[in-house]
Amino acid sequence: MFESLSDRLEGALKTLTGENKLTELNIAQSVKEIRRALVAADVNYKIAKEFTDKVKDRALGTDNVLKSVKPGQLMVKIVQDELSNLMGGEAADFNIKGKPAVILVAGLQGSGKTTFSGKLAKFLKSKKKKSPLLVACDVYRPAAIDQLTVVSDQVGAGIYKEPENKNPVEIALKGIKHATDHGFDVVIVDTAGRLSVDEEMMQEISELKESLQPNETLFVVDSMTGQDAVNTAKAFNDRLDFDGVVLTKLDGDTRGGAALSIKYTVDKPIKFVSQGEKMDTLDIFYPDRMAQRILGMGDIVSFVEKAQEQFDEEEAKRLEKKIKKNKFDFNDFLSQINQIKKMGDLKSLMNMIPGMSKLTKGLEIDDNAFKKVEAIIQSMTPAERDNPELINTSRKKRIAKGCGQNVHEINAFMKQFDQMRKMMHKMSKAQGMGAMGGGMPGGKPKKKFRRRR
Image (tube, rainbow, N blue to C red; front, side, top):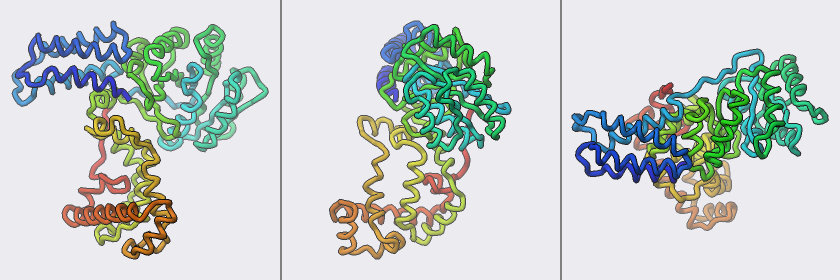
């Protein structure tokens, strides 16, 4: 995500390396490269120029008296602030008040509306403790209703559908009544898309909005389409006056133009971002955090929040006792792996850690990374998982056959596990679990991070 833009911005800001202070000359050189980076990322030239003009004005007006702050660091801070402002400045509110609250989902075909509808249902159910109902109003696309049915099963949400009815307004209104009668407190209406903007589509979505009076109308955008997505959003907003934008497919080869331009163009906030096909990969959009990630600074706040979502206090206490006694076993290790996997796809998680984006660049990191380790542990007997010390040479040979690996790989894994266990035991004795638990998904965080609004 944004790898090319991040690299180009890093190169632009490197022009200040070795400079003693910001001057009109070195600022102009840096700003010129930043503008080129934005245009290459498919940001409209007018927006890129206005952005860099603001950066330049702020940099020229900066007091160079602060000796402890290097010019490059100062410029990074200015660019970070302006990127955040360009994308909205702060996280936008999401209105789910009502009995039931109604959310209308719009967008072109292929933008990811149906998948997003399922992800939103999962988000509302798990994080907002809501009871969502998905309503199938795409009456044109083959198998659209079947897809939404599969999605509803995946996330454990209700679904309302009328396969024989071709009137989306009628279906939606009946869906809302069904929600009221059956105790659902949020209705998510998945609508039809087209391959391009047309009058028939606009008329239908306008009628739906007028009839339903939704709490939120969200426009779903495929972020991989760059400036085209921004132009489509403007056409929809001129007719629909939606409340916010959802950027999907951020895990793809996206240049960043849509994320950077859309708020400026339509003056509507980005409310959610989504990546991957898994139903738990929907996040609230924080402009300041995204700005940090674009500049290669990671997003440690979001990382900790994801870890805290998987935090189990009772499990942490149990684990603390075992580590202090040096009794951490393979069952505990497997449990930790499962909690990490629940946090999201591995490459996205690693990119949230400052500096990791450079280390993982070009590497294929996916959810299969743990499969070899899981296979090894699952090939052990219950007694071996509980007591790693039982595993001798003959047991290693049996485990190797069971998981399809060789004894050398089993030995390497056992050695790494033993080193990790000793290090954890040593840290728990020296500092206590309070100092180290926050680094483990099952550990107890030292303190909670407050979300910046």
